[in-house]
Length: 271
Image (tube, rainbow, N blue to C red; front, side, top):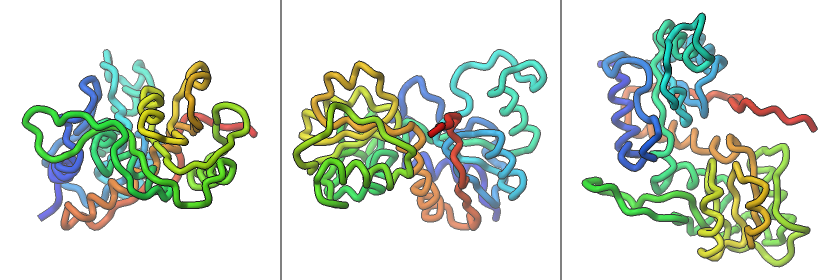
């Protein structure tokens, strides 16, 4: 019997329950029908024209993304008159490709987005940076945002650590607080995606260095630790492999799972 969109969604939501997502987030099945059969899945950070094109070319009936395509309410669904989001949604429907998003529900679980980033950096003894109470009626956990662990990939000289982080992220560059850092980096906190609200938490938990993205200029003045800011997509791409691993483990019969091999970021660096 063929695997369905609904079975794949159920497996993802057992791992990353929608109840832990930010209340204004859009997660779950965004386009398509639960009973639709699936033989191939394509996993990407964002839903883009290029992602949809690869899904069609390879025969993927389902795209799973981290960022939801449909976040703000749409007023029209006309490819001719609507904006790019609505137009792309129409093309997903026309091509009969379903779309599922696992966003902040994946950020707020142990083993989710920030844990994948911590693993990429080689951190050990990793735990949640900012635990939160479990939603009423939800078992499992613990839940929370960010991760913190011990740096073991290189010696703790700050310049060596920063170079290793840049290389492991494949980053074009990093924004770093303060003047040339001194001391030793032992404890490293991370938050995949927008994590400026956890700077103080990272410092209070004893982090020597905090890696995240989307930090504004003025937050660098009062960070009081080595604040390292990468591009948003660079801090979240590591979790895509974990989504694939979860589907391979929990959805028997789903034989074809692909990762979109290029960046979906709308930002381009000129160096």
